[in-house]
Amino acid sequence: MAVSDVAAAMPFDWRLAAKRILRSPATTIIMILAGILCGLYYPAFAHAISPVAQVYLNFLKMVVLPYLVSSVIFSITAMVQDPKSVRYLGKVGIAVLVVSFLAVLVSGTYSLILKPGQIENPQSRIELGEFINSQGSVSTDLAFPFQPPPTGNPNSGHSIFLDLVPNNVFSALASGQTIQVLLFCLLFGLAMGRIPQPSSLSLSQALNAVYKACTVLTNWFVWGLPFATFILIADQTASTGIKPLMLMGGYLLVMGLSCVTFLAGAFAVIAIRSRRSYWATIKTLQPLLMVAITTRSTVASLPWVINLLTERLRFNLVVVELLVPLQAALLRTGPALVYTSGVLFIAQLYGHPLAIPDLLLVGVVSALLALTTGGMGSLLILSQMSIVCGYLKLPFEAAFVLFVAVDAAVDTLMTLSSVSTVAASTAMIAPSHREAAQAAETVAQELEAEPAR
Image (cartoon, rainbow, N blue to C red; front, side):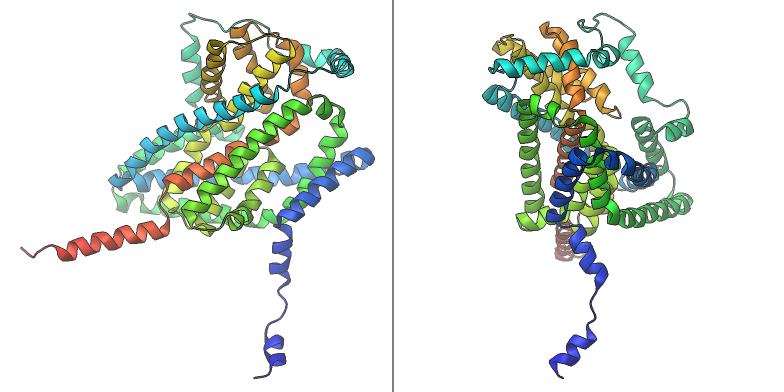
């Protein structure tokens, strides 16, 4: 057969070529840079096209809750019916402790070494003060009052538990209360697991069909990610400009280095567990990074985490579907980074020295406070920094406006850190298809080796 005949028999696959281009890391970088330039030089155009990106984000978010409900209930039911699956829950607790410790350690170390709050240039300090004064209304409207957290209030703990338990699950679904929905799914899945399989089979099949339909939708939406990234970056740059980024450059450098550290570690863990090269792992997870950058939402990124870990990296579907939503609520890497580095930045900005006991207090309170941020918006997460500052008598209100000005950048770094940590921890705990096959083969060999009775 001639070479020309072979070439003619293999037509050009434009869909595969387009997919490779759109999912390339180079395309992501180009779109981000183009968005920054568009926001700086054509702000009116950036604001005009921003509704297109908002519509795209609404498409992404509409899939999240059906995806979570179907995957969590289906996974919990399957795991309850398989007693061996309970061992994974203890590993999640260990992951929470390890990740919280590493988040505090990494961000605290970078903050103490780089000292982003120590601004020696008098002109920079003047510009910083002018910016704070010019944005005083924002600080007044959004900042919590400067006071230590209340102690001895017997009802404070009760209100937290009341916020976790939905009194109407349909209302929680409609309002997007992710933590409440997750709690309902966990309990409902446990109850379904206690029902005999013939009775629960039809509902399990329906949930599985919903899950697969949502997976198809997420694969469709990934085509528009680069363009949505360009539009959102352009709109954010046009709204804030680059002055706040320059004034907060030291703090953003600390957050950026902390985020890159967790991303690099997460890629390494996933590469080792999936037995792939480091670069191949990055290319595989590139759509997930684009979703995190575009949506700035850990919850909206969860369908991609599940899809990539199960479809491409071949980890156990049932375990991944259980661990990803659960760990997204517990592994709050981004907020822990923000609280630790933010408090140290404020202390350095106002020349407030911190002794070793103070640093330990910042680490412990930041790690614990991060666990309470599930389902919170970025501004509410930032405002809770006042609790840590209250223990150290640090002036939080004036500095709060600085964090609001760079909220888009900080929220993006928080999301990237949290999503990558959830993916890596799930890959560390969940068995791969290769390991599951080896375990089944070992069990079969043991059964064959047993003498007949």
